[in-house]
Length: 195
Image 1 (tube, rainbow, N blue to C red):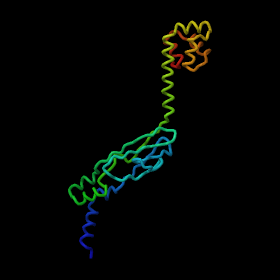
Image 2 (tube, helix red, strand yellow; image 1 turned 180 degrees about the vertical axis):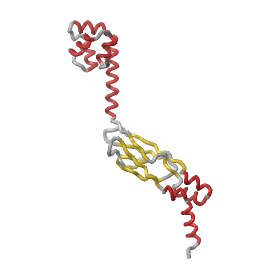
Image 3 (cartoon, one colour; image 1 turned 90 degrees about the horizontal axis):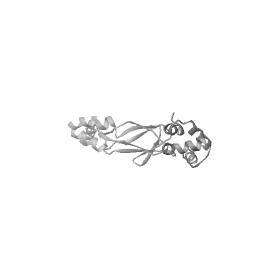
Image 4 (spheres, helix red, strand yellow; image 1 turned 60 degrees about the vertical axis):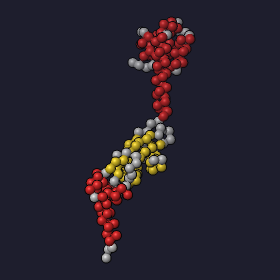
């Protein structure tokens, strides 16, 4: 004969909808534009992309950090909220208490996370190129008259030499570009490759 305590536990377990339907963990899949990215869940190494990782259900927000050598770390946040099954359980408090105790009442905002990894050197190089082009265009605009005079005389004077250094182009090529230009704006565009 089943004793009363065992019967009560069985009834509570069967009526805990959130725990039965959701389980005590949620499988979250991780993928990225670069394979083999290491995923850390709240600071603990979890898996390498592409992967599926079971995250224990709780009321806390989960922070997933993606790391790979040569790339910037990327961070994703998974927010926790009450599951639909647990909200229905509010009508029967013993099953709701079971869901609270097991974590089955919570669900995370996403079941799949896609992470775009970016190389920091690429960003830095692009930023440097933009700064270099701005400096070269500004120099060409403010010193157009002197540049035209030096280029017409086929001289590598201080202005042609300075523009050559700013653009990292051969002085002879810089003189040729100056001679092709019709005005200062045209030179600013030509020297930085704007058509």
